[in-house]
Amino acid sequence: MKFSDIREMHPCEVCGRMDGQRHHIVTRGSGGDDDKSNLMWLCAEHHGAFHSQGRSTWAAEYPEFSERIMAACERAGRVIK
Image (cartoon, rainbow, N blue to C red):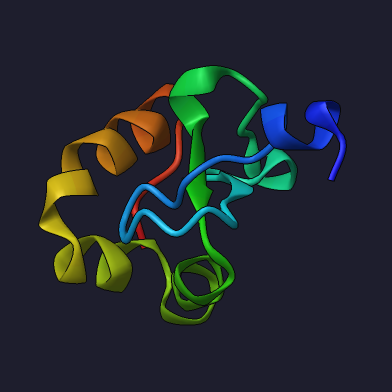
């Protein structure tokens, strides 16, 4: 593994696994942007769950992120669903 690869590794914000993927809380297609406040680092498992469950169900399962998700939705003019 190259040093540059190590710098790109991020822990999942939910479980801490070091395979975090960049996730847009509100997708760019839905009015979200690449601002840090609209991004999360999630492992493949939690990233997939976010997309399959939807924002509101996922936020209910992980309430420590609900305020952050709601704020990103409000900034993008989206209703959480």
